[in-house]
Image 1 (cartoon, helix red, strand yellow):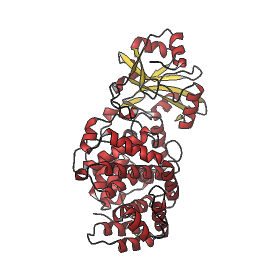
Image 2 (cartoon, one colour; image 1 turned 45 degrees about the vertical axis):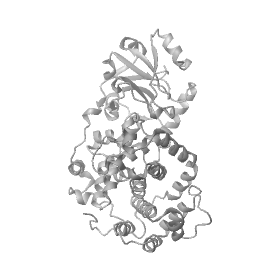
Image 3 (cartoon, one colour; image 1 turned 90 degrees about the vertical axis):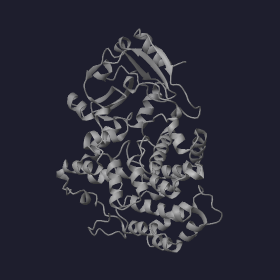
Image 4 (spheres, helix red, strand yellow; image 1 turned 120 degrees about the vertical axis):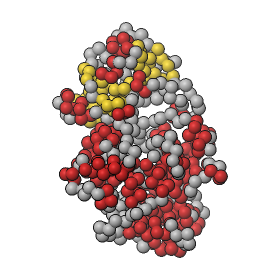
Length: 479
């Protein structure tokens, strides 16, 4: 098992004794599908931070959150994580694809969290293929002999979420009184108001006698929405024979009633809030992630046996709205949004909800699911959004949350969306009645079509507020 020569040279120069291990592969399809055999508390994560004074290398355990604010206060710095492009350039200069969890640049100060000084054995990832250096604590001490140390991390186990979601949102809002948001949950979640187009679509989708004619009429009243639905159906992704000349064509000939009604609803809600200009790794490609996730959700559901298949339309809508909490978070907590994103960037090894729980005591998933509930959205959407990062959730309609979790991890595995990768247990595939081979086939098909999906996402991009026909009448549109 060979490792990069730069790493070998560094270890030999310091007289460090080491072993190289690889995570045991369960499937040859992708490293994502491997089992996670190494305790996270013994895995070392490296993040490179920078400010006007220069860059620093920071090492933390994989099971802890790097408290960026505390680190900055301790060091008197204004540090932020380097961009992904910069990280790739640094790795390339070392002859590697990604930066290893090993400090290789002697010109950059090194800071380690003291929690790394406790395990008897540590694992440092050296490649994306799952190779790790195994170092006894004494050998690790040689590697970080010139480092500064400090207590600037938080155990993830401490960041448990309040099971009462509404109480959590209420408390978080109370903690931010300077935002002048009224404390009643319903009033808080009234921001922004439900767009008129979305309200009409919701009423239509719960009407068992709803017709294609009624759906077409609603969509055509919003010229922007109508153009997007037609453009979506006209995309080579769907390979429709002949030109799509109208919303009616899009519904009847290509997409179908169920998909269009959920697509239109997702687009209407997505455009109800201005897209934030500040986000992890620069401007967040909100619509691109939404389109990728929705398309993958559609493919996964179609791959399931018909007896176990949930609603394709609702699964698609779950995908479109999967990161809607990002928009809501920016809307409700604008002064703190930049701080949240800086901390997420500095913690690429953990889920963003840990950061939000640490800073706000509430997560985007909690906020968005409660907002959907107040807007009388289908329970499948409320559950899917709330529990999408918790594959062990076993409540009603858990299938939507599990599908979202799977879709998120698959997209991360091919670097189409950012976020940490987690091993996927066989149990998840069994519960969804999907084989790893079927899932890999769906993912490969989507990746092959990604350029067409990116074109669709670009057409949805728009920074506008609520749709032009939406009215902020101050009334609560919910239960």
